[in-house]
Length: 483
Image 1 (tube, rainbow, N blue to C red):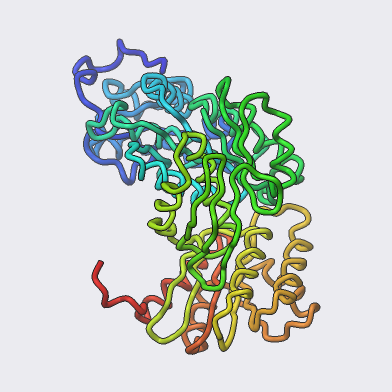
Image 2 (cartoon, rainbow, N blue to C red; image 1 turned 60 degrees about the vertical axis):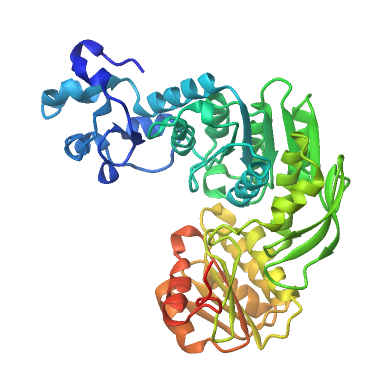
C-alpha cells in the first residue's frame, strides 16, 4: 500500500486486525480505519462531494482503531495529524489501498468467484444464488448488504480475514458488481476479483442522469463479461435484448436463462395465482424438476433462474436446485409479502425503483387471482433517470392505469407525473403526497380489510417508512407464531 514504515510504531505491526472500517462513527476496537478523501472518491469514479475522513482520524483512533490508512500528502499538510504518525499507514490513495488489500486476499484464496450485475435484482439474485450453492455444502462468501461498488466489494472480500477468519474457510464468493457512472466501475471491480462466472440480469433505464442512454448502461454492464477470467462462463438473460447481445463479447462458455426465448435454463408450467409463491417446472441441461419459489413476480422467477444457471455451471442437478429454492427466504424490502391480522396484504418492494421494476410489480399484484376489495399502488418518484425523467414517470403512470389497479398514490417530486399519466389513461382514484411520512399517515386511516397494497420507490424517497408505520399500528397475521 506504499506505507512509510519508518514513521510507524514497530509495535503496530505485531497487532492483529480485527476488522476494516471506512466510517469513524462505527469503528470498534482492533479495526483498521481507512480515511477516504474527495480525491480518492473522484479517482474511483464516485459521484458527488464527500467529507474528508482525515478530519476524523483522531476520533477513530480514540474509539479503538489500531491504525488509520491516510493520504501522505494530507498528513504532511496537517499539523494536527503529525503527532499521530506512529499509528498512520501513509499511502497515495486510501481507496486504492483498500482495493489492493482486497485483491491480495483474493489472490491468496484463488477459488471460484460469481459476479452478478444488472439494473435491478442484483441483491435478490445474489441471495438466491448463495442459498442454492450453500445447500450443497459449499461455504459461501457473499456481498454484505448492498455492497457492490469500489468500496463495498473490497469490504465484502475482506470478510475472509475478519475476526480471525481465514480464506480457507470459504469455497465460493458470490459478489454483486454495480455501477452508476461512465467511469468503468465494473471493470475495476473485475480487476479486484476476476469472476469465473459472470451473471447479467437485465439492462434498464437507471442512472441515466450520469450515463445518458440505455446504450451506455448496456456498455457499462457488459464490462462484467469482458472482465471474466480466461475460460470463464457468461450467464446471460436470453429474454433481455441488451443482455443477450453481450454474447458477442465473450468467446468462452455461455449459459442462457429465460422464459420467452430459447434458453439453457428455463421455467415451464408457471403458476403465479397466489402472492408469495411461484410454481414452475425447472429445466436445465442436467434434467428437470418441479419447483416452487416462495416469492412473488416473474422478475423474481427470473432471478431464481439466474441462480439455477450458476448452479448448473457448477454441475448441481435440478432436483437439488429446486429443493433449495423451496426453502429460500425473500430479502427484506424486495417484494416481501406481508399479511396483516386486520385482513389486508402489503407487498414491500420499498428498497428501490425504476420504470421496468415498478411496472413488473404492478402487473404482479394486478394479476393475482385472490378476491380483493382494492388493489392499491403507492409509488415514490424514481431517481437518476436523466433528461427524460418526466416522460418516463408519465409513461409509467399510464401503464399502471392500464394494468387495472384501483388506487394509485404518488410520493414526492416526479411522482406527480406518474399521477398525471395515470389520470390521462383513465384512473381517477389518485392522490399525491410530498413525503412518505404524509402518505404513511394517510394510509393508516385509509387501509381496509381486503386491500392489496404495493409499496415501491427509489431509496431516497424512503417509502420503507410506510411499511414501518403499518407494522407499528397493525400486527402481522403470523405475529403470534414461533419460529
